[in-house]
Amino acid sequence: FFREEFTARSAAVRVRFGAGIRKTVADEIDALDARRALILTTPQQAAMAEEFAALCGPRAVGRYTRAAMHTPVDVSEEATALARELQADVLIAVGGGSTTGLGKAIALRTDLPQIVVPTTYAGSEATGILGQTENGVKTTLTSAAVQPEVILYDAELVTSLPVAMTVTSALNAMAHAAEGLYARDRSPLSSLMAVEGLRAFRDSLPGVMAQPADVAGRGETLYGAWLCGTVLGQVGMALHHKLCHTLGGSFDLPHAECHAVILPHAIAFNAGAVPDLLAPVIELFGHGNAGLGLWHFAKAAGAPMALRDLGLAESDLDRAADLASANPYWNPRPVTREGIRALLQAAWAGRHPA
Ligand code: NAD
Image (cartoon, rainbow, N blue to C red; front, side):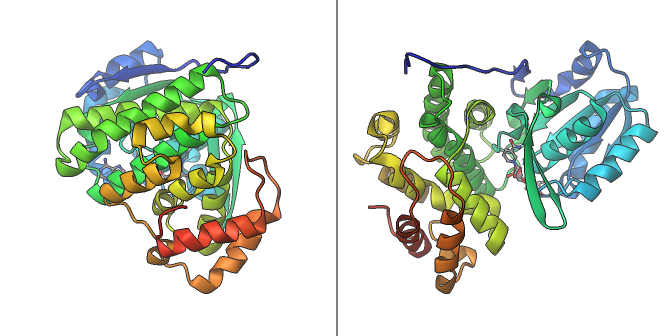
């Protein structure tokens, strides 16, 4: 992984790991010298907010349970107003990327510290990235102000993640590591984390799919999520993420499923341009080809494999290829309309990548 020249960036984050570690949340609040916690989650996870309120005791001054996908600005402003009204001095975000996004959006507006307790593998807790939506337009910013200060990874909270979401969320995380391997701004450290994150998912996901309540297996997937999320926080993404952004934004395809379908195809598209950098993926997933190895892994795990099953019409593929190749961006292999059109056709039909 050694490169003659590199710049490595790491955020100052306190990470605690362990089954049941959520029960130390009050200590973490005290360690931040905070006294008034606002607990955040989605309507679907409101019961988890209740549990955290009990764990925080008198430190819990309020709950906001309306976190939503893609961090809508009106929700963030409503929650920020509540944080100010309650004079909260710390945010506790319990949930997936949507809840973490809300915590970051409030932190951006108030500079409050964040304790994040992730319940999916999305990895947002480990980044200083925030995507927000206003009037249907999503914009993304990167700022130290939104990087969470404390992360509590508790495998017991992930056992309730439905099996279908488990596999798409895992592939979403793995996509950050896979693209991180060829990022222009990678460092030896980000590459080590990417390989280890992929390895952790390779080894633990099949067992978790068979036994979703297995806390040890869930723990290893969370470890993978931490590593993959940290990679996302350190390096830039390329083709895979641009494609998913286009498909999600312009055709309203479901975010996590879209990542799952596109990943093997995007990696296969780039594999010839950076064979050395993707060699660890072949070592981990076999089949002599990085994209094909990931495709077989996803298929064995029961992931969605075809864009047509996500609601994309074949007649949309031309426009999708136009959009995805319209604004040039860096990618290890030059992005051409023709190349993207062929990639999309294979991903639409659910064929394995060449
Ligand atoms: P999510 O947070 O939207 O969760 C999806 C649904 O599953 C929600 O209803 C949630 O309440 C529920 N859920 C989550 N964990 C559960 C559990 N353990 N048990 C039962 N139900 C559970 O989904 P996500 O995939 O984690 O996050 C997606 C969002 O995160 C997107 O908006 C994406 O853009 C963002 N994201 C941001 C970054 C970043 O660095 N900024 C990184 C990754 C993802």
